[in-house]
Amino acid sequence: MISALIIDDEPLARDELADLLEGSEDINVIGQCSNAIEALQQIAQLKPQLIFLDIQMPRISGMELIGMLDPESMPRVVFVTAYDEFAIKAFDNHAFDYLLKPIDESRLEKTLCRLRKDLPPKSLDVLAPKDLTRLPCYIGSKLKVVSVQEVEFVFSDHAGIHVVTASEHVHTHLTLKLLEEKTPLVRCHRQYLINPDAISEIDTQHRGAEVTTASGAKAPVSRRYLKPLKQLFGFQ
Image 1 (cartoon, rainbow, N blue to C red):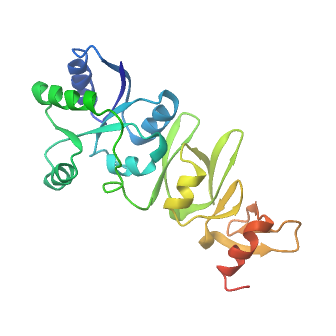
Image 2 (image 1 turned 30 degrees about the vertical axis):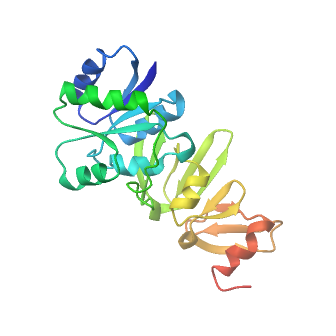
């Protein structure tokens, strides 16, 4: 049985695809998501083998979502889209699976047949953005999109990954590793990433050193990362 997640901001489109997939005995739809933030949470929790992903979602697109997923645990992806000449050309050139809306049942079955023969995920690096400019975040039941430029620092603890701006403290499902690779945030501690543009002061007298941000917040700097952090500001 192949576990599948449907990600689309249009409820009718999600329901239509779910109804079509009910006819496939080996496809188990384990959830539906209406946006990228919900999708990141569900992918992390449910670990689907397959996702049907609408590329034209508001705020955070399907392509941006792909760039936020860990390549080591990436599910197989079938893109779902209204006709988009650029996207379809890219899919065809790299043999990625896609479905056009409204979804044709026979085309869906051909796609599923191909998936059954070759379920392991393909690398989507050629389609995914190399850099993230917005972060999918949440606070309680509220979902938010935060610009990377607004972030002062990010840190991890037992409660998850925290995103701190000058005005709020929220959470994200993105990992520190991915944020370090795809944003301007730099490592200042094993559990902290800092935005260099947000640094107001580096206190090297403090035990282990400490950064003060423009808003007055504090973040630790470990000995390992102090020198490269100082070098960003021209100090040896």
